[in-house]
Length: 276
Image 1 (cartoon, one colour):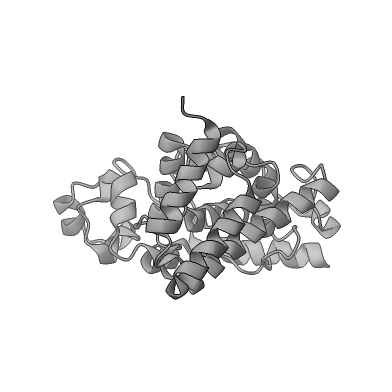
Image 2 (cartoon, rainbow, N blue to C red):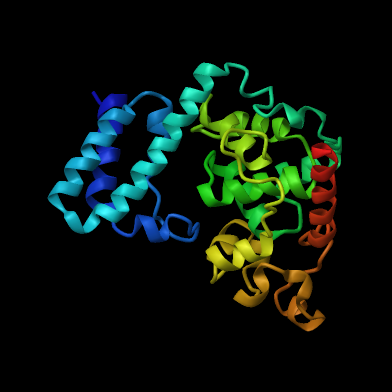
């Protein structure tokens, strides 16, 4: 009979033997199968981080050419364990800002915008692709998780706790430490957090990490017939290009629910107000 432990062990072995090559360079590409996919096994205790660490070190000894990829992978594993230590010291990590200055942050209550984000209907293709992948599969690529989280808290100014709760309900690898710690990192309220003034541009993120539009085309098939230069910004397509791709903005695919430049300026103003 197969057990969770044997399943976790096999998954780790497959990754270290056949999937680790190129990890450092490709792990941010959602259009490629370049991540470990071990987080659900870690989440449910099918394999321990210590066991993965030693297996990875043995793999590096056997194949020195993979050292860079393995070191990068272990740094990600280390971040997960750091989040676990945060949870130990802060059991209310999912509800309370680690940085108390954020307790007065002017979050917006916008049920309509939150719903659009949850369902992948924001009008920003990389964001919508990630949220639809999550809804259909229970997983989401790590780079895209950062992009969709940044969009919620910075473009929409919706409290990170609403995003954390949604991820907790929908991710198969939702972890009591990593989930809130990473949401707080993106929001700027957490430990060693990204500065709040760092606002991901979802268009540039899509162009950089999904350059051919393959990831967006998979999860937002309404856009699959747009050429790569337009798939991350369909509102810039001409009426003829939209018609050729069978797209009607606002009907077959939503127009952006917020303007990137205006949203960024609003976020920076909110951050400045909080600091003052």
